[in-house]
Amino acid sequence: YAGVRSEKDGSKLRSGAPSAAGDRIEPVILDVTNSSHIRAVIHKVAAADQPLVAVVNNAGLSPKKPLETSPLSDVRWSFDVMYFGVLDLIQQAIPLLRQSRGRIIVVGSVSGIVTLPMGGTYSSIKYATEAMSDALRLELGPARISVSMVNPAYVNTAITGRALEQMHQDEIDTKFYSALFEKVQRKARDRVWASPCCAETDDAIAHAVHDPYPMTRYYPAVVAPSVPAIAAVPVIKLLSIHPEIH
Image (cartoon, rainbow, N blue to C red; front, side):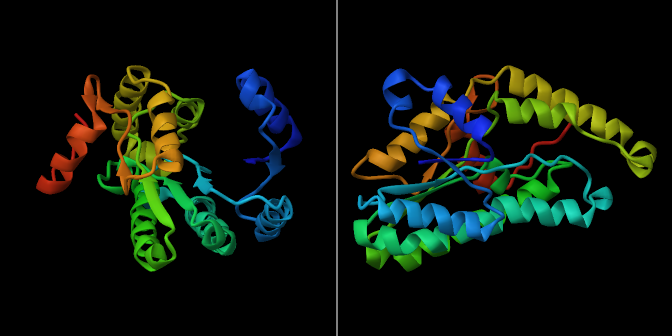
């Protein structure tokens, strides 16, 4: 089952998948901010009378704006999608996962470890998601349910490209943050375009789902050209070095 926002998205997903996989994918309408959508999907999975092997939480946004000028309505919406929606889906799936001793995979980000300018909202959510995953791992361990975080760095995907193009400056942004907007946009664009697509992240998710010994955390992709996240992130976290925007 693959959660999609519309029938059109479901058709696109099936047509873009390899032929063998496309036949097995069943798109389901799922807005993670809508608890009734989640409930309907869980009921559908339960009715199939097959074990629920894993839940992969991958819904996301990429807000980029100074916290001073971030509308609270936008911040709340981002939390609804990337934190409360994730927790709602996990809570409703746990009864089935208990039966199968299944797995929970949460797609986070290195932004849950390192915060950059104009990434305050995104990093706040990803830090919270890190804590949520750690708590779930401790609480669900006795039930033999594993919890893995997949924390990509820069990945060249459509969502990152759109986020950079849609960076919006209001009057206060223009007055106080114009130079920062330009620097963040330039640096991020250079790093995204120089980064691989999502294959490494896909492989990490597949490992977390299928391997007999899933890892608690994965760091696919790169933080800079030729610098893999798995090598850089532990050092950054240990030394509390926050990359600056120059």
